[in-house]
Image 1: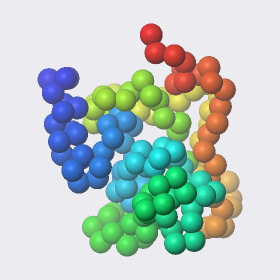
Image 2 (image 1 turned 90 degrees about the vertical axis):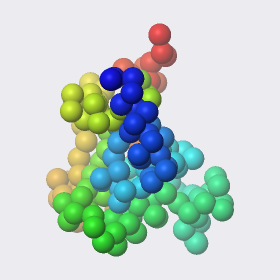
Image 3 (image 1 turned 60 degrees about the horizontal axis):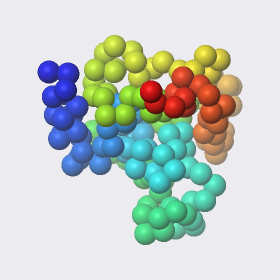
Image 4 (image 1 turned 90 degrees about the horizontal axis):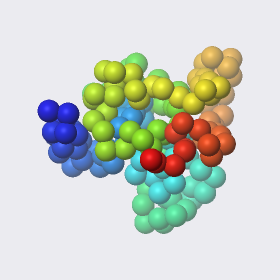
Length: 152
């Protein structure tokens, strides 16, 4: 069953949300938009290269994933209110070791929430800053962390 679950998950989420099977699904906090579809795989907001028309600097014919996520988090009709507010949460760095795993299993076991030692996430609310224009910065830690070390 463990090898079948990622196949089933991807068969469901792939066609609907363009799932990249990262093993750490955050669709609920990004307006049901997969941030792994960003050419830069940014999980905490847009880069500085979003064009005036809302398109990506890397793939100009593609709408920026984060412009789409922000729009969906505000306007998707069936998205629960609590999920709408998660768009401003700071998501942990991607654990590339989980790629290809079922995020459903990782969610239940807590593997998707483990972060490098010393990394501490915050939300805009917890910083006391209510400025909606404030952008979150993608985490750039040392290359030798449990998540960035070479695969063995």
